[in-house]
Length: 109
Length: 114
Image 1 (tube, chains in turn brown, cyan):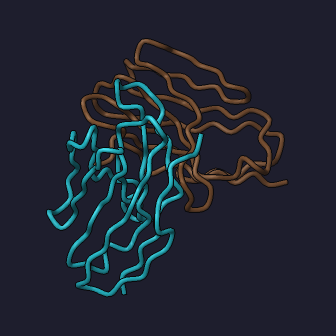
Image 2: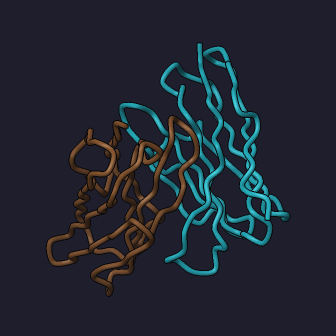
């Protein structure tokens, strides 16, 4: 069963704009991770945030975590056409990584 | 370091047949997890192996099985294939000594059951 639920399911923006994706989950977690997948290929790890952290940055990525609301957001700033992909949140608690169904991001040049 | 290698990349099988997929993790990684990805159900956890022992199992029927060898390479087997088993099967490797580490994924095996 899915733990994380991403929102929106699909997002289309212009190059240079920011993209925000949200993830909600149901049970307590040790950490939450974000992954990217290009066209049915393998997943690539983007960022990991632990349950005692509130915000993390990596390059153009910013992730926030609110454990009281059981939610996380991924912000991609100054998006590029190469950012077009599906983005998944994955939670880890007492079970291994459990993925949501993802947000499909399209960045139009 | 070489990445996670999955073989074969593509496979076409007939209903009722069985199939074996292979995953070679990153050198030194002892944990291998398998996921099934379909458009309808998304990424679903199949099982995780650590040091040749199944450490966790997802909610899949007994037709899905796996194993891990002493060199950490893993195989998964699906018997009596059904059309619904058509999916992208992904393998992920992690060091395995603790949680809160990133998972490294292979490119997947695309299985089509006809």
